[in-house]
Image (cartoon, rainbow, N blue to C red; front, side):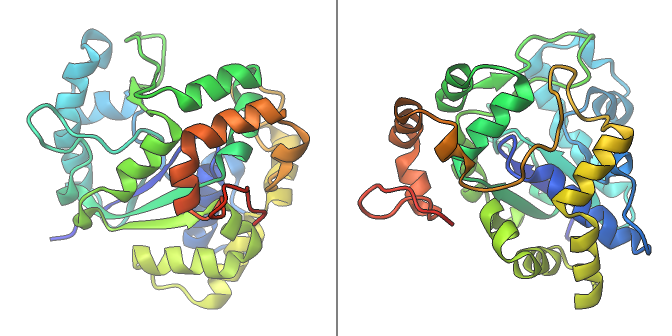
Length: 288
């Protein structure tokens, strides 16, 4: 039996919010863009989601205790949903000490995994966190990196093991077949949105026409999202960032990263970058 959860998974700043805007507009099917602050896909590691589904105050639990309850939480959410339930996630695909996955196949309808050239992702992530590029690159290169490591009732998100960029990508691409992982590159969303988004719609199993897909793409364009953010602000923008939507391009890293910074990323992630088509056989970065 197929579950109802559609995971929208990615390393941070790889197109997750853009895809959520698209799917929101696609399902809404209205004649105008959906409000930016009413996007589908709740945060799959939101403290409020966990507390509501389990009836337990997560602030009183250690991260390991929270993780042990998450498979049951997701199964419950799936069983109580009528039709697709979209959850966004930046954590890597992981297993509990007993060998069971945190993201259960039983609860899953399919997974959309969004990948982006880590050179561009680093630049976007640095702006998002308002941190220096060297610090962000260190996070992206840190094996087993954990975001929001400390349990605190002041945070609205649970601890999540993002891992480094390559580990994150490989964890999802290597997930069990029943997770039905469909890979989309950010660069393909830019270059040929009709094909990239259309394939995702078919992977999810939504019965939508080409006209509906193209309209949703138009309503979720970067310029549209940026304009809405400028007018009404975006609740998901962290307070330290000047804006959530900045450029929405690929290749901008060439004007931002130093040679040493770019080399640090490529050296760490060259195997996966080559697998995803970001490097050629000689290790040169490709412009997609």
